[in-house]
Image 1 (cartoon, helix red, strand yellow):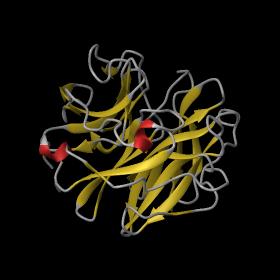
Image 2 (spheres, rainbow, N blue to C red):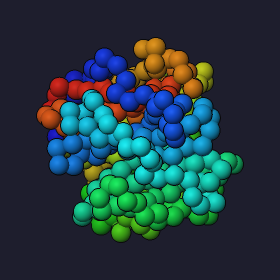
Image 3 (cartoon, helix red, strand yellow):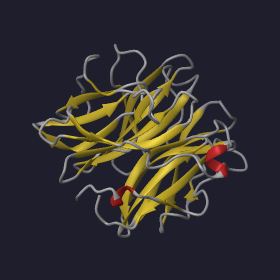
Image 4 (cartoon, one colour):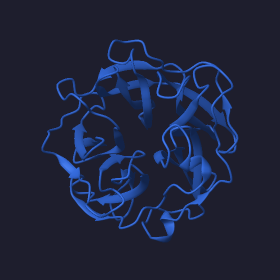
Length: 293
């Protein structure tokens, strides 16, 4: 795959592909999804809320064409443990390694958000693997490169700066407060914070990380950064302008206005699909006809 300016031009689908249910765990909001392709179908794992700013669970919707989804009635991951019971399970990202699916998600106890992991063989039944950085405190948004480099899997995470972590087995991760690889930039679309988006992609030029950024007005955008394949902690290029910004009514009005927030990028039926949350209320789709990124 190659990275080019044209490859990162995305066209919006005409409407949200997932909306809140009439009732149930996602009666008020369905947003911020992960996505996996299996047996020619798209499995979309999304954050559902019964009421705005309320408890979150992770639901599953399945599609044959990538745009029309059928939801499962019950969530596949709902708050059960003390570290998630008061706030919920939020914002999943999923990769597959050697036949096992690994989901990173935010476990929120109502006060502190912690990066957690669950694993599955079938995308339906999930085993919790626990908090990834027990001594870290606040941590979120783990985007994993599912290919080893220099003997390690690499994960980008964080929701103020972006840090990097490494693991030999996908379950035990090492990091440091000093391992910051992306920081906010004054005067840019990401001046307030940066946060990883979908699992990164290994391209010819390097490791492509699509990330989310917010400005001082609290408006969220989608950008990108490129890292060295020899040193995944060394950034070699970065977007000057966002590739996606709030424009449509469902991106500008909702539970949290003026938000586009991506956590899923998949290749499906010959083109790249970028699924993203809109205003913390809906799931939307943007795609590129370019087969290479």
